[in-house]
Image (tube, rainbow, N blue to C red; front, top):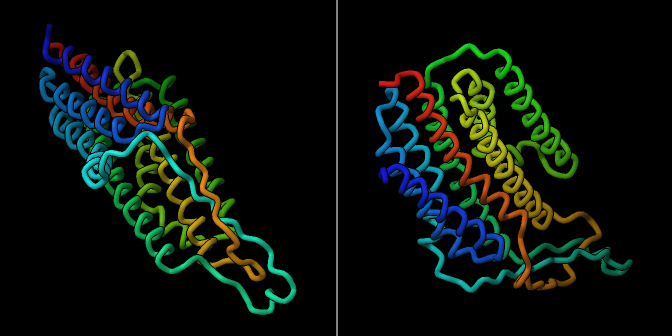
Length: 293
């Protein structure tokens, strides 16, 4: 069996295990399997046949950069049992006597720890942005083919995704400052814009199976979800750091998520792993189709 097929099989198996671990909240095992899948995909690209110039190194760099946040999380956090806890702070209206004293916020150490977590997530989105840029270089280096029937739908879908992201961002402006939202999520926002541009241009550089546009679509969705999550968490931090008048922090309810099946996280893990894989396989097939020798 060819090394490329073995590596692709390893990617599929490790990726499937990562998704299943994510489904049952086994974050540590999911991260380990995701790194194995990314390493196998990089090996697949390295051992693939001849390609167009800049395609192979751009694919390898893009896949490696997309895997950096998972590697950092796995390196910095020890193995934990498959449990999750959610602390839900509750704001309650002040009564007449307490309302005259103003408002209170979360303790400053908690706010600082929350802000530090947001900064780490923003750094992870910087790696996402760099990875998307590398994958964009790989797609743009592919041979161009005239496919007007496929190009128009790809551009329409790209524009629709950007409209959805814009509407979601604008819906938060009433409660949160726009500059704060953009300042918090700019790496993921730029990654979404670049991925949407790649999606709009991918149809003219696609292989026969259309794997490149499909991978670009999943990449755009993954970047848009990262931007949504980052902005949502910053918005929550802003709300608790700047509570409205007449509110104070009453209590925190700890809710255990152990034993629950997290379908949304598993779907996101599937999209995150499938996007670079489809782009890599599709790009290599497009190169072979352009130059069969």
